[in-house]
Image (cartoon, rainbow, N blue to C red; front, side, top):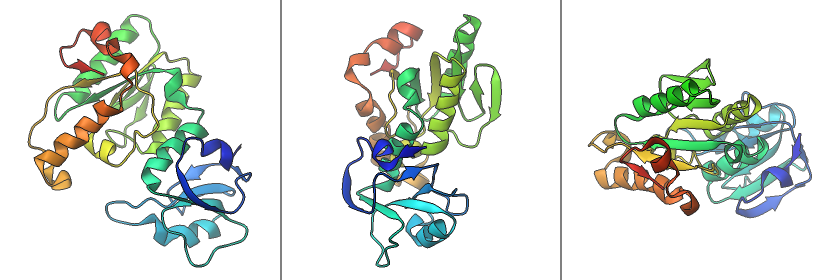
Length: 247
């Protein structure tokens, strides 16, 4: 287990009520599945607000809550951490909880309206043919080397994503290729991840049911490339010689 102080590293905290030395057994945004001594993240989603399930999470064993609005009834046995954005903070918390696995991999993100699955899969297959250990996170399947895991989302949630990357590290993967959807970017699912590079495929007038305007859709994609480290400028371009490589 890790303490709250450990897993809150680099998180911009607005207020704390409780003990940050509390040890945490797991993190979850599902109040029903929280384990004893767990941290519950009250994420405000598209259809539901995790703040409505704080009491349920505490009843089920949560010892800490990551939230944006402090409840009026504070339990003395629970630590409450208020942040500006739970979704963004959860990405950093998940990275810290699982030992920042993306920093131990050469992680490449592939984004765009079409072609993400093909490119990510092709890159994974190519490095595996070269005898290099690599992981894959795509719409069709997740892979740790050649072991397949059923895919649930194009880009998993913050917790599932870091857990999967940690599995890749544990099994000796050197590279990881993942699809990065605009929904995932907008919902901070990639917050805290360390990318070695990114690939852009194309952009069409899709997903406007979620983003509402094409401008919003463009801005979501742009955030991914703004997020990439400047020191990795030519990595993807040199590695796969793809014309849309960027960092």
